[in-house]
Image (cartoon, rainbow, N blue to C red; front, side, top):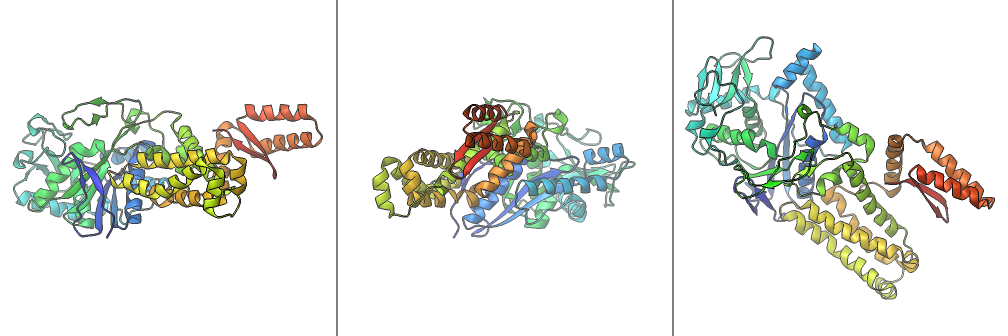
Length: 508
């Protein structure tokens, strides 16, 4: 049997055990992209959070079926196509390709299924028909409206009161301001499909209900997405799905990640979160805000693992402030993990472990104890509301202990058995958090390539100065050697003299 898992459920507002429909198996649906532009780092938070969740669950023995959709029919796609003089289909296909390149670049595992709205029209029409037959919707001039007043449970997920709400859909033709469109009557020069109510296209919310049911069934285990989707999107999904399936429960566990924000800070309160969760009040990152930083730009600056670490260092439900320095700070943190592993890799010796620990002392014992405890500590943190921040804290505690130990000459010479314990523990970060999956030299090489480009430097120029300094040292021209080291320091290049010759790295 897989390991037990507890997660915060947005619907119940408590951390509770995940109780699967089928023992040992989880059906997970996550709302994906509306493909009218490139994916930015705000979107990437959800992608990396749920990628890490799925990886971890599979590592812990769960059989996971993971579905993430594409919304390829939308007003913004239509508007972009009109502005470019092309078709909505071409716009959607172009940005689906861009999305896949970005996710592959981030090292994410692709979902088991990636349904598209355009491929689910028949299922959407059928679902709307069932909602109408059940008396939860009405037709007016070719548009089908969901009747919010007919569904007493509306607002349970978000804490909203229907009598105070107004949906984003224009009021023309609907009975109540909160009613929302399931099917939109056709408009000139827009994509449309036939239906029993006339030509038209789906409303936004019905799309995920239909795609989820078509791929995973009428009831699923976990539905994920950003906190901004709680209302209206997920609230409407519940209403549509349960009204179309005779009241059957739609989702057992609602999981929502916090947003990437353009500022810092939270405040308590908010009607939608009556349990006093921090309400995210900073400006949400988004294309319409003109504050979005796209993923392929981020990947030009730092390795993918640094981007992953940036998101995982904070609990998934908390807001995460973004600044110009965010990725470089994350890269510096990641480098400390790689440097600890490098310290361990360089320790020599093969004496029995107890003898080495006794000879080196307390710092050796600390490394062994932390290393042996790390897998269980990571699992315990992740199994209790997917606390990646706590798991990383345990990893960095071990890294600091390794680095302290590595400062001792005796440890570098005899610490191989201790290092073996540390390396085994650090390898656990791969299947659980997706970190330390590169070789040490490959990591430093990628960092050098990307950071030199950002600094406007070339490898050849740096290596030439390093070679000149090495020649000056061989000639015992210490003044010139020191001057060249100073020049490299000003270029943000750190130089280390080793028995095998000088090694240089870009400062972080």
